Amino acid sequence: MIIGCTGNYRKSEYLDIITYINNFLVKKNIRCVISSDLFNTDNINKDDIARSFDIIEFSELENISDIILCIGGDGTFLSTARRMENPDTPLLGIHIGGLGFLAEVSKENLNQSLQYIVDKKYKIEDRMRIELSLKEKNDSEHYIALNDIVVDHGKSGRILKTKISIDEDYLNTYESDGMIISTSIGSTAYSLSAGGPIIHPAMNTIIITPICPHSLSARSIVLSGEKSISIEFPDLYEGISCTVDGQQRFLVGDTSKLEIKKSKKNIKIIILPSYNYFETLRNKMRWSGNLR
Image 1 (cartoon, one colour):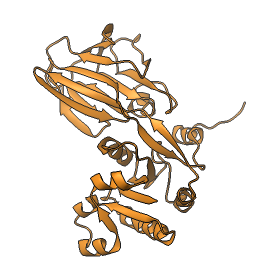
Image 2 (cartoon, one colour):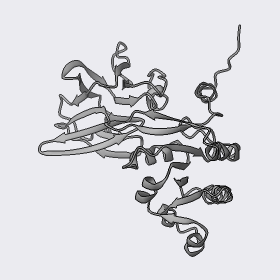
Image 3 (cartoon, helix red, strand yellow):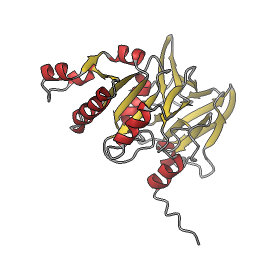
Image 4 (tube, rainbow, N blue to C red):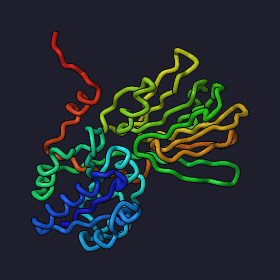
């Protein structure tokens, strides 16, 4: 077995955690490889790091690893999932700090979680990603998201009109601050804050949620993951922005057409025996659970 480690090397705890993981796995005669992204920080002695760890490029790491540990938080998990060319390698998130929806392992249960991996006591589940095709004139660009793709009014204070079609059938023209197109796993992120529903992450769905709509009748709609969504802008508008997984942000022209659909390749994630989605949901939502 080969375990790969990547993550947020800028966090001070990152080096301590990969040191612990490396030592643990070496004692179990399991190879541990670390992404060379670690060399991008100036806060380490690179010669010492090279001697202490098995450092390889991320492109090689994702191809040879049986499991990739994403160390940092939900943002780290998202960036790793989006970065992967080989999504057949399953991911496990290790959270530095509080409990996350995507990063299920914390420093407190790290030892037990690593033992589960060594003993192969885990499940592998698929999670749907969505892809964006941005078409403007003769140009086309493509992006992958695990959580969501957001179109908003950018720096402007004006209402943004977005014409939404589903499989070429017209749905509605929303007047709002923008639109969120999310996966089920992303339903507990920005979409939830904007009033969208909570969807179990294993479900094959796409959620459309308007941001602060001008009409009180405008609500989220949940679609089959097999549907294709197109977004167009009927009015002249400067400064429209698009954000992918809260990390990639860029301007969109008002003559652009956005097409969003299920990615051809799902991401695979590790589910440990200690993880319970509904318990995590209760904790994150601060539900009291009091019976009356």
